[in-house]
Length: 134
Image (cartoon, rainbow, N blue to C red; front, side, top):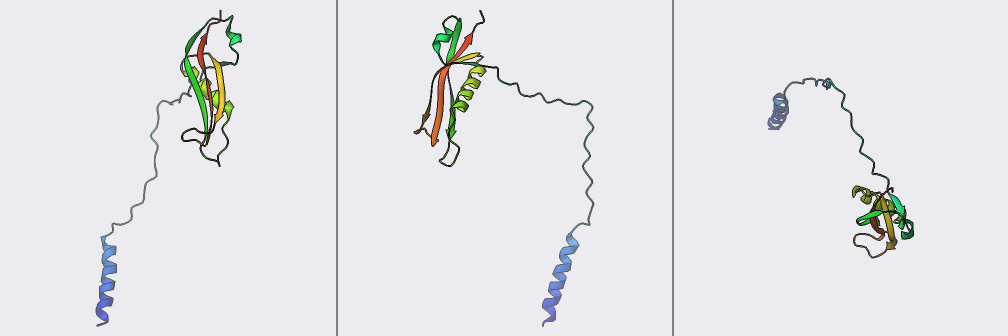
């Protein structure tokens, strides 16, 4: 009676090994030859946007107002690094350059504690300007 379970165990172990396919070595990956080198273009840097903090600096210069722009830096929780006004100002300048502006008149920057989704937030607002060189 003890022989029957041992025979079934031996048969099941050998039966499973017969189902597997024989080992076939894997061939190494061969890269396809490229006839032409592909160059990756770097992303263009945003144009330089001059920051004006005083409207009196623009009195003698002709300019066109392109609209309001803002920049923000968010501190997600109390453990994160505090919001930085310089980062918010730089993001405002980047948004202005995407509007084809070459200057920003800064209205104000402040750190706000009651921002949605942020523990604290630095916000800068200004006007995007296209200043002529005349």
